[in-house]
Amino acid sequence: MVSNILRKVFGSRNQRLIKRMSKVVARITAMEEELQALTDEQLQAKTTEFRGRLADGTALDDLLPEAFAVVREAGRRTMEMRHFDVQMIGGMVLNQGKIAEMRTGEGKTLVATLAVYLNALPGKGVHVVTVNDYLARRDAAWMGKIYHFLGLSVGVINSTGGLGPDSSSFQYDPGNQGKESGNPNLKLVSRRDAYRCDITYGT
Image (cartoon, rainbow, N blue to C red):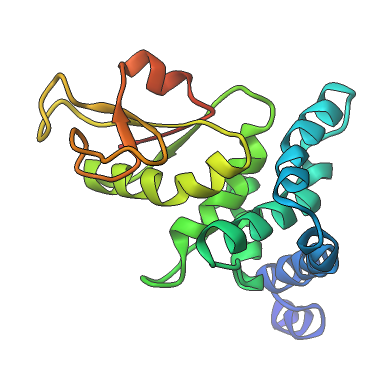
């Protein structure tokens, strides 16, 4: 009974977390107008700026609001897709290493770009795990537009089935017809090259 009373007064743990994250979303949204005024080159230069600040000792989480705002603007410019506030919260949850449950159609693929971009900034590589080879290729080719715009390389590692052992690793390459992969913008590369990318999609 006491726990129920406390929950009514202070809210559930999830409610408190969402309230805290909503304040960060407000900070992100406050940067939107300023970022929209930047040229493509100025926006793209943010990746180099962030990496420089990390090298100077800035904590990765301290970059989160700015990095998320940059990804939101990159998504708007490259795909005409603006991350919604609830998707920003989803990205924060992923960045904390937690599970964010989302229904079909709520934008899981787009949400992932936020945490993936941020965690790719240190240059140690980020792996995005999907449920099958098709989705790994599709998501890399689709979201690769955002990452490529911001100066990050994107690879794909598929299993040896389906496409065969000699056609199981790819890299995002805008303009590539995708004959080997079945997906436009993906070119065939060695598995080593795919793993060397800033971001690697796999299963």
